[in-house]
Image 1 (cartoon, rainbow, N blue to C red):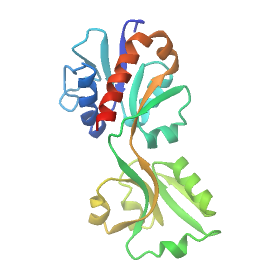
Image 2: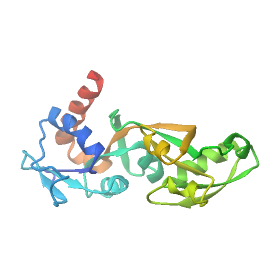
Image 3: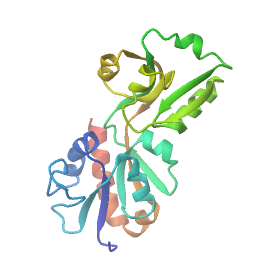
Length: 217
């Protein structure tokens, strides 16, 4: 892409849906719905602005290495990524949820998580989990999973899970309960630092448009 063109990295699902009003405020309208299209590069109503559809966990990497000029990623993803090479000007206050510790109902978490104890934790977020339990003085064996986190305590793979919780309905449906809050999560605007300098006149109005929506909420 040239210095007169912009690439925005987004993920499908809730973040994309909740980003649409922000894009609209900046005058950007996607030409297609990524949920209905197989395309990974989506044009917009601006000839010089395109969207790339990537996994949520990959958004910071695309932005860091300049494959996208900016993108939107959850705080959970950014903590795990480390945020290297990224400018994070805005908490967009979208896709809100909580990072929680959850266990099988009936499991005595308070007794099992005393300082000096050891737990097996299944999670997609080993960095966040490790830091949380280290601060509590609890030793953990981390088991990295990519899906169906709720299954792990039910079949004895782990004592607990560390995962995002929105409504809590999935936990309840699987006889689990949230027992400890780690951090509130929302999605952030992330900008490639080099692009911010070379494409400032293109990017700055979009940042300001997004900020206006956030402030009006």
